[in-house]
Image 1 (tube, helix red, strand yellow):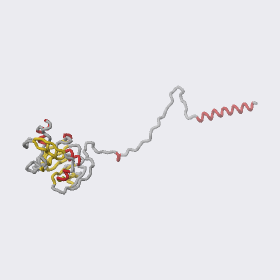
Image 2 (cartoon, rainbow, N blue to C red; image 1 turned 60 degrees about the vertical axis):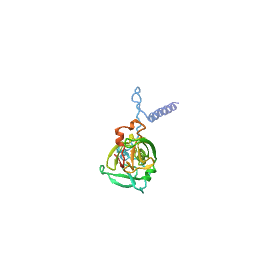
Image 3 (tube, rainbow, N blue to C red; image 1 turned 180 degrees about the vertical axis):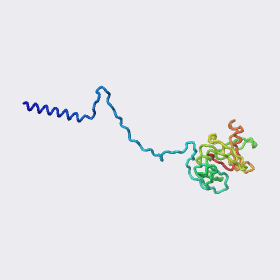
Image 4 (cartoon, one colour; image 1 turned 135 degrees about the vertical axis):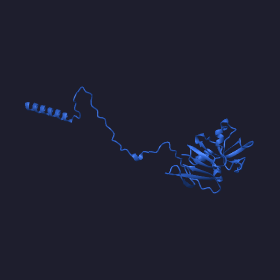
Length: 223
């Protein structure tokens, strides 16, 4: 019996020792709060090549469908940062790192763009006339240009700058018809920027009159 009690005691002590060895945490101070080691995610290498360093204030034109080359007499040339081109690019005199896109329009190409018309009098003509043509905003949208400024230049090199933010959906018109007929150079054509002057007093001021360029030859999209 004594030998059985000794054996049982030995087994009990052995079980306690095994249990102590199996404990994953050693308590140093029973009154202290348990120590928690947070699991940190593994670090992800920084990929510099995936970070764009391009300034956010640099205008970039939207991609647009290509334009065919004009087949008739060129009426309008547009240059600058455009979404397409149909003529040889020009060396950019300001930014030597790139080139300026060039688009040329003939009468048929302008006629294929969305058109609008309105009747108005002007301070340069007699009576009311009906002007038709392409809204200037539509010409620029076809080239992927939706922000910034443009410089409109006439045949005699008169030039004026216009912010795109001040262009309405249907005004001004890049008019190519007056009372249904093409306009000659003598009649301020073949292209004339016209506003509906009679429609709103805001179209009757020196700023708008200065932007009403006739004999429009080219448009520059400014950086």
